[in-house]
Length: 235
Image (cartoon, rainbow, N blue to C red; front, side, top):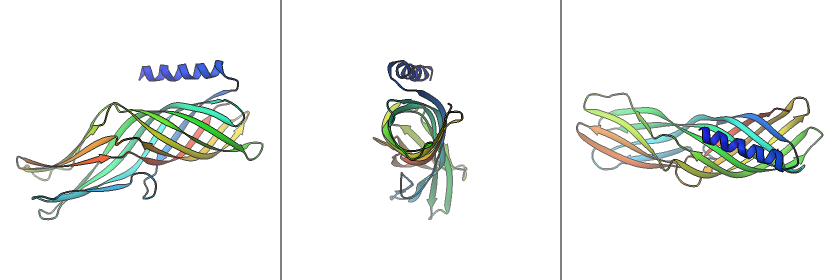
């Protein structure tokens, strides 16, 4: 974590002293919005041999929170980076109709993102601007994940293991929004973002332990999501 913060400080220093224009520092909060149209929302899985069971992996509300560093390269172009704490949450359901088991539990995936984005502005008035940006994400996944559903009995248990596909992963992001600029109050931004990893971020293994036998289903987690973006840059 210390190395990541040092890396961001080095980037900010280079742009502050090596380019004309002003560097802004701010905070951002981005709630993740589950939906059926943009980003991964729901996927089904099933174990088709005996004993049969199935379920769904459904995206739940999550959030992204962090700091943002923006440097103006010209009146209409800027560079933006930062570091974000990202928490994705999924609900996993388990159902075995033959046995009458219907259970579910939530699992959260935590990672740290460093976005490297280029921004383009269109001035709408003296204080209002529309902007669009795109770039890449460097994502750091510190741990694997594990959850288990409530215990059915001593002989039956459903649980899930998530194994990360690497400590460092990459992806793309795209952003669109509007901002209000004030010399005294700073910059207030409202927009939306879409994040798409280049490869699945984790492999989920759903398991039914029936007595001493384990029945497993494997699913890849895409990890894409849509957010509502709120940012504030100090003047």
